[in-house]
Length: 115
Image (cartoon, rainbow, N blue to C red; front, side, top):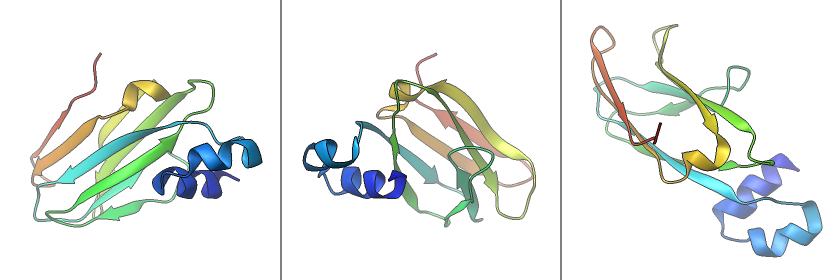
């Protein structure tokens, strides 16, 4: 159900899918990789990483369930340390852009999350 919901939201079909699978609104998040290295993005520590190539912007739609708190993590593919690790209520992530620049040795991380 989760994958179907994410696909439905990504395709703008949530209104149609809502009665069928209980699809809830999502938050759209952008992860911008302004480095020369690959990044790894994960919506939580237990999830598989999604690659964000140099110069790429990944758009992620996070399906919210009862405004639960969500973690978002980003690390360089070659490293083990997360350079970005934030938690916020799911709906607070709407429209947030996370920008990673610099290098794996000296990363620069900014976001537009209201704290």
